[in-house]
Amino acid sequence: MSKFRINNGYKQYLSGSGWAYTHRRVAEKQIGHTIPKGYEVHHKNAVKTDNRPANLAILPKGIHQKIHNNK
Image (cartoon, rainbow, N blue to C red):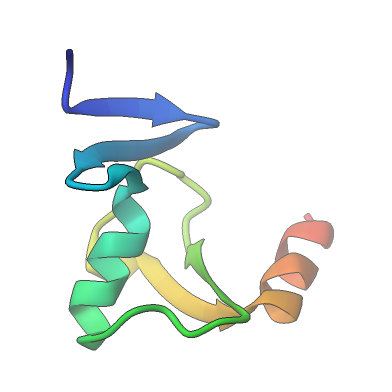
């Protein structure tokens, strides 16, 4: 069984508790804690597999949805 996969266009890895999204883990490492409730990770360049810290932003869910609804 592979320890990595793509789900809905997002990279995932197999963690100790199941499948986890790579972009969320990278963002959490960047800020030093878990992503607060009501916030989401945004890929600035819209490439779901580009999980470089410089490409990720943690935004309130409503703002994140507005960004994607305006495209």
